Length: 180
Image (cartoon, rainbow, N blue to C red; front, side, top):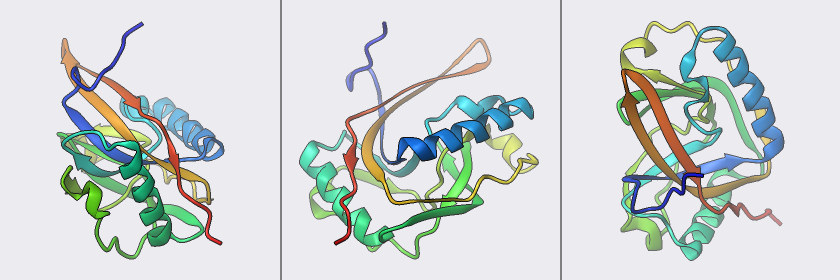
């Protein structure tokens, strides 16, 4: 068993993690991508990176982020059209979350946020940047869901012997509150 700790990892991200029922749909889509010849289909967890952070957010910061995101996203989260997002030195592909704008980030987490991603894409395939423009990927499934959580994503990428190798761990989930 390999224990992944913050000291071993250098890259931390704040991610939106859909409910496990939605992740099952995403898993099936990743299977179809892998069968179509896209080897990066299982190189990223089924989550949407929201921001790069210098250090993992603590529980109180995650709780504030979950409230903030619920207000920004509304009661229903929709993702339909294909989207891409630059991630590290690759391109993340998947369904793009529909959101008009993100007015900012909670002030308590602002000191740790180093970058906010311009598009929120639920990761289903990680493509090399050189291949991303020419890839003919099948359209992702349309998604609509209420239950989602925010979490820290600990990420490490190594290219061992020319092959892409990644390790990640998603921290504790902080579920988005219900809208009353």
